Image (cartoon, rainbow, N blue to C red; front, side, top):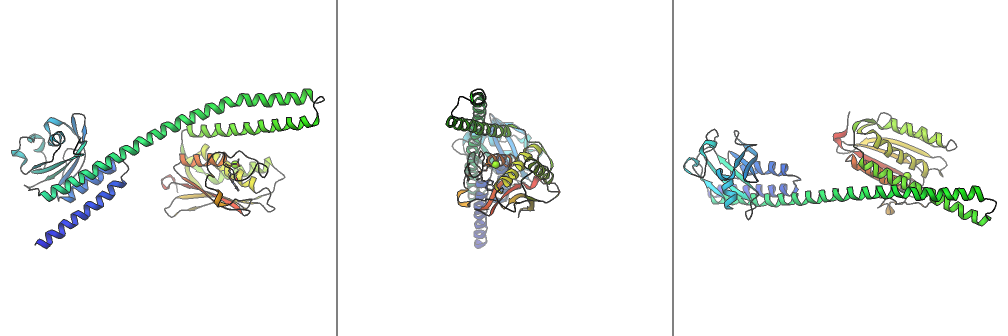
Length: 404
Ligand SMILES: Nc1ncnc2c1ncn2[C@@H]1O[C@H](COP(=O)(O)OP(=O)(O)O)[C@@H](O)[C@H]1O
Ligand SMILES: [Mg+2]
């Protein structure tokens, strides 16, 4: 008999340990409540459990798990309910017969199965919530059971404080990102006018004073024009990037293959002397934002096109496959210049380039833009490459976004 009791309490401790681990992984209050309401019931073999949140001077019965309905969704004045008493007095309440305890509003209990109960506060020093457990027959709560419940409540309190911290951080990060974005947007915008002026006056010098300018100075003038042009491209890239972050994502079914086909034709038209063979898998569809995905695919294809321009038999492929967890992964592959993966840590950050302007022109904003698009789709991006042997870029879309 003793051995059996021992095994049983070991099993409860094991259960508690598992629950503590689950709680540490919970990402929001709903997840916490879900874990706690069933764990509480199981830990003390109760017929029902509730999760009560302090809501000003009210007790909010936020969640429950019970043999028949209790008070889920209801609010009671703290002064008239037992969880209010528990939170105000910072101590647990154990009641074997609820109808003889004057802390219990009998009317609220009459429609329910409850005969006995135990309620423990969450964050004992300054309670923010409580866990209630209920029995349909007169039940004597042992001190061991009460300890288990209080241990559950203490872990719950840590989990609740953790998500609070994370949520605060997340909202601060969001705020700061929005500030930075609007700052970079307005700076970029303001830079356009002076750059336009530099380019404009360089042009006037060239056109109106060409006969008076010595050859060496013409060289300098060309440099000025080129730099102004490059700066203009950088600013446009930054403006595009900032705009992307502001656009609302409108999810529709997007035929990515068709986007790739259109852009490949455009590339060939823009540069008819270039020869590259395209292989495009037809019918690859994802759920995403048409405009954002066009920008992403455009950047990847333009890169493949650009970085394979020195390759004699340039080859560009678009394809897709399913990841292990069933997500759609699209890829763009080329056999161009590639790059050394050991230098690729910052590949997706703005202005990071692995090739010089002399080797291949560019601004280094394209991949940052693609990464932003994927972030807005809650997807992933990564690359695989080898110097001199080409590069492959992968876009993974979350499973739920996929339409068959
Ligand atoms: N297909 C590719 N092949 C080789 N290198 C690439 C490829 N795509 C991107 N890269 C590398 O990543 C860098 C960043 O790309 P991106 O942000 O599009 O800038 P940009 O095209 O303006 O250089 C490129 O400068 C290049 O070094
Ligand atoms: Mg690019």
